[in-house]
Image 1: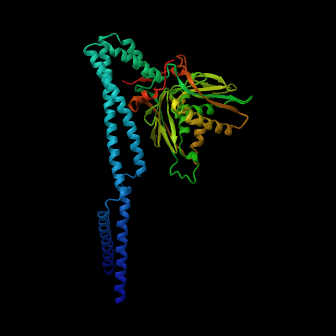
Image 2: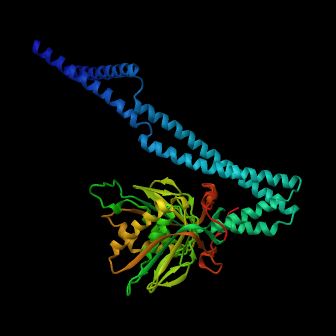
Length: 237
Length: 240
């Protein structure tokens, strides 16, 4: 009888302990129940939202100023809104790549070794690296890169904006980048990318040079280019 | 009967344990304050909610301001001879991705391999910025006239890069699934995506990238101005 009571009490103590452990574990569950995201993920999301908000806030502030000018123009007619429209029209043209641009930047030259045919992927990789480095204007063999620009191989040619360039000839990629970063970061980084491309392709492929240019001139997109076409697209009201 | 009593006793003992556990926990927390990590997460969630609400507010303000601008410009056109310059401005805004656009096209969705395990799965089982750029080039080549990536309209300065495993689009972190909305010739774009050898390689079972392609009769892509201010992207450009 005494033994049986001892058994009961032992079982009860074990059960109490199990309950205790469950309750203490629930504390940790509570942490994960707060949305299922880690603190790091939440902090990253906050940074992203703050950046989006700052961007949009700046845009709205400018729009607000513009509207005030337009309202003043409609009330009194100072003639300033016309100038503002001209400014805005030009800013959009620059952003679209419809105007030539000039500033300090870098020039990358790719020269294929005799008999080697240039690959579109190499040009694309360098263009993407330049975009990621914050380049604000890029041209490949004097063809301005715009939103719809494609770089692709078509037999013996590489097409850029629908214009064909021989795969056996040199390619020149020019870009306008932040002058403050050219020497310290952009050129050394591009040289390391060039090295890795050369290692990947082998010695008998292509030579790549990267140089700083204080006065890079990037041409505007020509109106006869395929990238200018907007058929199939209409502005939404 | 005995068995039932024993079961009840066990359950009651577990309940007693849970209650004591909560009591112990409560006493511990009262003593040292709320667990730091929980508190930090709770605080971060509150900040995030505030930032989300602020973005929603700014977006609705932006829509109102853009609408008001259109209205005022229309009225200005009635009073002054600005129709020529306004038409040019609207054309440039259209070409620079600064207006909403509509048309038919496709929606491509890409996602990392389900339950990706960095120890056993190949590196291609997660989507990289190079894959995104590759697909964009494929779509432009197939005749796309406008593209939005995860809801952000792409412009002449399409900044898609990565920091470690995270893809950034115009400096903002993007998470899978990655959605490409493209207006253009549906068949040509669809064929390009379905037949491209690299993409076919990625969706093999051993790589496991998940892909869906849907034709859409009416797509509405947002203006770049709905998500970003464009002036910082032309600040370095001088007119020759």
